[in-house]
Length: 266
Image (cartoon, rainbow, N blue to C red; front, top):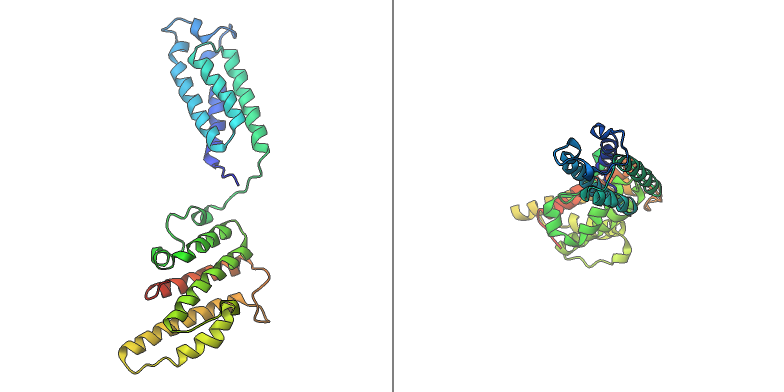
C-alpha cells in the first residue's frame, strides 16, 4: 500500500501553476531559447529560480511516487539547465506534466485520514506507553496494529489485535499467580475458571500481601471492564465491532496493560 503525502500533491499543483504563469517570459518570440538572450537579461537571471521550482516539483513528484510524471519534469530541468528551453516549451511542458500527474493520480484509490486519528498511524510513542512497550515487547506489534486499524476504521480487526494483546497480559498475570493455563481455552475461560479463584484465595495476612491482592483485584476489574465490551449475549466474542466498541476496547485494554506494567512483565 502506497502512502500519499497530501501536502506534496498540493505543492506540486501550486508549483505547476507558478511555472506555467511566469509573466516575465511573455514574449512575442515563443520559440526563442532562453540561452539566446543576453546574459544580463531578466530571462537569463530567472533561470536559477525556474530550476529551483522544478527541483521542488520533482521532489514532490518523487514523494508521490509519480515516476512517469517525474521523467517529464526531469526533461524540463535538463532543458532549463542547458538553456535550450523556450517560453512556449515551458508553458506546454508544464501543461503536459499536469496532465501526466492527473493520469497517474487517477490510477490510485486515495483515502482521507481524519486528522485526529493520524497519531494512530504516526505513532511517535507506543500507543499504550513506553513502560508497556518495554515490559511486554511481544505485544508491541499487535498494539501498534490495533492503533492503525482504528485509524483506518477496521474496527473488528482492532478487536482481533487487542485480543492477542490481552492474551500476553493474561499469561503474565497467570505466571504471577503460579497458574498453569491452556492457551487454547481462551482468555474469558481462563479469567472465570483460573484467575478469579486464584485472586479470591490470595492471602492477605500481611500489608505486602494485602497490597499485592489489591493490585490483582484491580487487574481483574480491568478484565471485567474489557469483558463487557468484548462479549455478545452468548458470552462469545462479537462477530463485528462498531467504532464506539473498538475505541472503548482500546481504552480498557490500554488501562489493563498499563496496570500490569507497573509490577509485571513478560
